[in-house]
Amino acid sequence: MTEQAPAAYAGQRRVLSGVQPSGALHLGNYLGALVKFTRLQNEMETFIFVADMHAITVWQDPKLLTSQVREIAAAYLASGLDPAKATIFPQSAVPEHAQLAWVFNCVARLGWLDRMTQFKDKAGKHKERESVGLYTYPVLQAADILIYKATHVPVGEDQRQHLELTRDIAAKFNHDFDAPGFFPLPEALTEGPGARIMSLRDGSAKMSKSDPSDNSRLNLMDDADAISQKIRKARTDPDPLPETLEELKDRPEALNLIGIYAALAERTAADVLAEFTGQGFGQSFKPLLADLAVAKFGAISGEMRRLMAQPDEIDRILAAGAEKAREAAAPTLAEVKKIVGFWGA
Image (tube, rainbow, N blue to C red; front, side, top):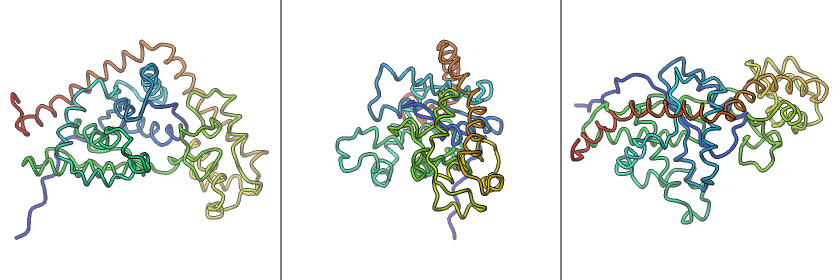
C-alpha cells in the first residue's frame, strides 16, 4: 500500500516579492525585478514590499533608512506598479511577518540554515562576527511569502535556495501540525532573458549597487546626461560585432551591451546582433543604445524625482498598502496560532 501524496494547496494564486532599501536601484533591478512586478500585477493578486527588516541584517544608517524606503517605493511607482492593483507596503509595518517568522524558526532545522550558501558568501571566514539576523533571515523570508500564502515568487539564481527552504518549511509545518494543504509550496518565477545585467565596467560581474564605481551601473535616478555618458564609457573591445551570439561567448562586455539593448528594446539578442553585425561600438551602436536608455529611463527618473519631492504622497500609498497587507496577513497568523495551540487563539 503506497502513501498518499500530501494534499495540494487549493487557495488563490498570489505573487509576492520585495527589494531591500539599501542603496540606489539600477538597470539590473529594473529589468530583473520591476518590469516583471509591473507585468505580474495584471496576472494575479500581487504583494510587493520594501524589505526594511531584511536591510538591517547589516548596518544601516537610521537617519537614511526611511528615505531609502521611500526611494524604493518611488521606483516601484515610477516603473508602473499601480497601488490599485498591487499592494505596496513596508515590511516592518506588518508585524505578522515577524510573528510568523518565530513560529518558522521553531519549524526549520539548523542543518537547513547551515546549507545556505548566501550566508557563507557574505560572512566569509568571520561568521561569528555577523548578526544572527543575517543567518536566520531566510526564515523571515519564508514568513514574508507564506503569511500571504503566496503561490509564486520571482527569484534570481541567488535566491533559489531560499525559496527551496520556504517550500521545506511550508511542507514541514503542514506535516508536523497535521494541516495538509494549509500553506502552499510556492513556485519560482525565473528571471528570464535580459534580467541578468552585468557591470558596464566588467562584463563578468553582475551590475551591483555595491560596486564602488558609479560608472559600472545605470541608476534609476540618473539624468539623461549621466546615462548617455555611462553608456559611451562602457567597456567594450576593438572588434566589430559578429554574426552569431556564439561568437560573443568570450566577449562578455560586448555580449552584455547587446543584452541590455535587447532588453530595453524588447527584442531578442539575436535580432539586435543581426542589425549591427560588422559594426563597431563607438560610431553607431553605443549612441543608439544611449538614446534608447535615455528614452526608457527618462520618464522613470523624472517620476521618481517628482515622488521623492513629495514624501507625503509616498507615505500615504505605503500606509494604505500596509493596512491592506495586514488585512491579508492577519487571518493567516490567526489560523497559525490556532493550529500551533497558542493560548487565546
